[in-house]
Image 1: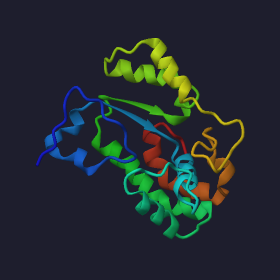
Image 2 (image 1 turned 30 degrees about the vertical axis):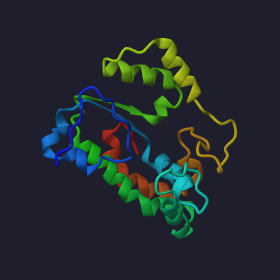
Image 3 (image 1 turned 90 degrees about the vertical axis):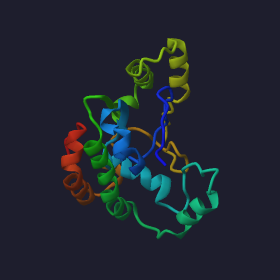
Image 4 (image 1 turned 180 degrees about the vertical axis):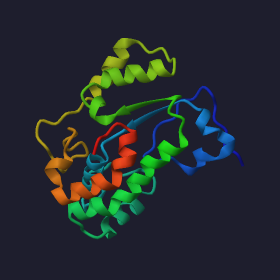
Length: 194
């Protein structure tokens, strides 16, 4: 069965490009999109605090919560450097999949580092990009509600710190050098000079 997508529906995001979306009949390269990317080194550090420890800070999903918690509990306890190096290739493949399957002439790409400090502009740009009229006061209210910037890092919270550049504080120089080498080509495509 071929999935159908209504022209008038705005779909929410995902953390990877689902294979379903790459089926030829969906003509993905003809679709407009918004893609939010993040410095892969910071993304891996954030992922470690969300999923890489026995005590997850990520919201437990309502569906399959037992399986989610079992997976977290059963994983080996790794230090942050070992975890990010073990997870890096998977993240690199996600970045490459977007690069290789989307037509960037039809899309809007924004970097987390820019959006973190100005969510209101980001939201306004999305609605403008898709020609959706949303009152400025609504955009402002939503942006303010989600503009969470902790004053002090708290590694028990899902939004632990948020500020860009965290990898430089959390990872060993050797780890950063390995990540820079692995991500250099794909990260450059998204505007990151590693």
